[in-house]
Figure 1 (tube, rainbow, N blue to C red):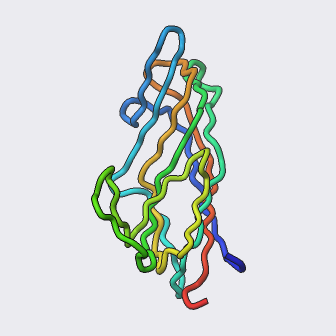
Figure 2 (figure 1 turned 135 degrees about the vertical axis):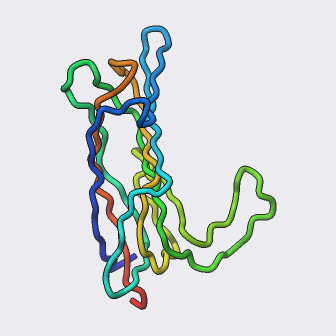
Figure 3 (figure 1 turned 90 degrees about the vertical axis):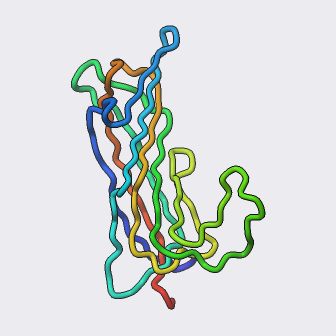
Length: 170
């Protein structure tokens, strides 16, 4: 993967997440837990523009979730987070096949979907995703402890997404 080019885009928000946004809260004894699972049918789309098609070799995400101090009483600690990306492009020719579709195993020749998280923040492709046209963000997930409110949490994130690529034909 020598001589790869790269570009970045940022994901950033801060909001008071509620049940309407996919926020859930529960308590076991004196311990407070929370979960945020938000998905979109259309996704947020980063459109790749230019006069040449690109082949994507690697995607990386760096950043973190945080809880705002104000307003008082809606802070929470984040243990884990993930973002689900779909790369609109084409994988290279398959090298195998799925015999029995147990456990949801399927072949994905086009538009690979990857989940990047706090503990797995990058994915590299041995064969690049060819002719990538856009990158869609479909799912946001976070979970943690010490939620001060049972109905919401004031949470934000700032993430830098880096895409490593070559132009087609290079």
